[in-house]
Amino acid sequence: MASGTRMFARLASRLFDRAFERVLQRTGFNWQLTAIVSAAILGLALFSSLMNSMQASSRMRDYFLGQGQRIADNFARQSTLALLFHSPENARDVVSSTLAFPDVTGVQISDTRHQVLLAQAHGGNWMIKPDPAAAPRQAMLLAENGAAWLFAAPVLGGQSEASPFDMQEHAPQLLGYVHVQVSKGTLNRLTWSLMLGNLGITLSFAVILLVLVRLLTRRMTEPLRALSHLMRRARGGEARLRA
Image (cartoon, rainbow, N blue to C red; front, side, top):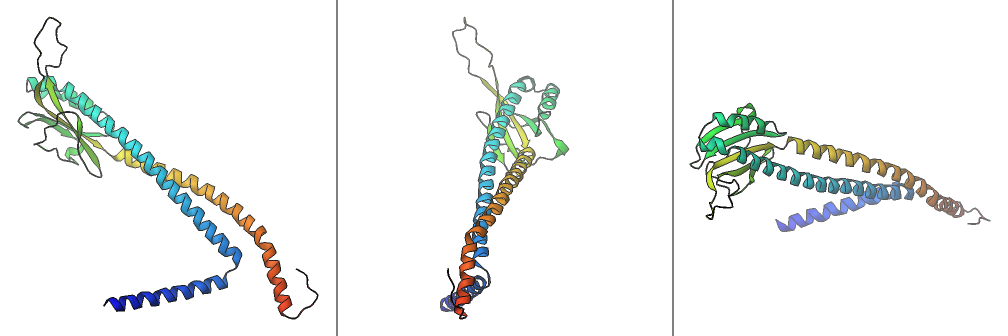
């Protein structure tokens, strides 16, 4: 089996070498040089566009992650009253204002026993279902998929400024947790737009450079073509030729 595979690989390599030699024989040096330089320029343009887009996408991702954590932390601070009184009515305004943020598609408030006080999502569907057992100690990214991020944060009570006359420190009381779902739609659109823009710019410069390379290769290979033509005349028996 292994020997048959090696023989097939050798045969394929020989056929490719022969076909490549025929192509080189049929095409002139000018076209060969142009093709090699064009392939190098286009490959460099595509690689540069891809690397720039990946770096920009990484920076935008970091920005969206930071923004999602800030939204979750702010949502947790505003949900204190609703969890203190265990009142969904007190949470409706907070939920509505949080859902008004760009790309926020779902929010949830739950108590320390992970019983949901209020949950709301655009269209009624969660792209990432909140984990009922999650117990984050700070605002953080809890989960993500190709469509959204899910952030979570604890809701703490007793975080008001302590009185200077109070000698006893009061630890914050855990009241519950909040979850915030943020869509990746804007990030994906910006990434594709940036990639297409970079690709268009790099390809435009590549086309200009290819035109210049084409003109230069013509001037560089013109003496070679003249010499080749002269050698063919000399091989045909023509005398008194000077190169």
